[in-house]
Image (cartoon, rainbow, N blue to C red):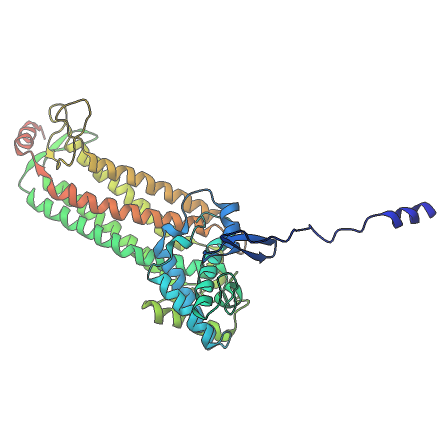
Length: 433
């Protein structure tokens, strides 16, 4: 007993936690605090300590938030709507609301893009994205009201900018807003492509060539019929894709983290979707089951699946054009594609089907995006799918790539295709069927 008491009296006091040294700001930095301690933040940065930690700990892909300005604009639109709904619910005052809204307007216009360095594929259910936006808005609002960057007085990124919200419903909603907005450009490109294929089918309806099944000679057929089939397939895929995109107008804003609405007042929840529609000029409605919305991202995966089927159709179309234009001596040689650049560094005068090949490679990438999105859907365990950000960035990328590739395909390939009529007549005359 005495020995035990002696040891007790000489033992050092137990530490209450890690000892952290007080950081001092160096020239060009400021010091901010969070739950884990202190970090130096660039003095002129609109982002703060949460963003700094996310960049240090989670940045690996190079696909940073700054590269997705439409998504930043959508996030700022959600934050602006939340500020109004929080004012309606008496969660924040009119002074803070106004400052937050003015800050959001700057981001909606595309300003301050360099202030969004977080990786879109960071872990934690996109919290790095949400906090990056919260910090930028808070610092802009603080300056608007006469405060200093990093002081978060009188506007705090969590207490005021993120009031009544969770990353789960903010990012969920902004992702769907982004896809809906981005889809309009791809839809126009696809519609132009369909119309150009239809016009080409009409132009080539009198050109008779040979059809092929199993890559073997079959009966004579109008070259225009093949192009008409391409137009029909692309039009059908466009319609199916449009239907899946429209379903994204059902959102979960107000459901907060898991769909329960915990942390948001009933007054806020009644106001938020109305305020979002007011600002965005769109018609969003709530998902029937907000718990389902938090857990399952199959609506987003459905868009990705439709993009993948569109890609598979375009692979078939582009491959057909490569085959029909192959040669000119050793191939099919039935059509001539526009020459857009030299095709070889060693064979003089060689022209390759580079536009269809570009389309093929775009489609390979889109199919890869779809596989990633499907994995994100499958791995969303229990009450929250924390991998929705990975699905989102791959859908964003797939739409953007397809938009540009389809536009180039229509403009620099399909519209300029001409038939090699002599070769087509020669082949048609040889058919035995």
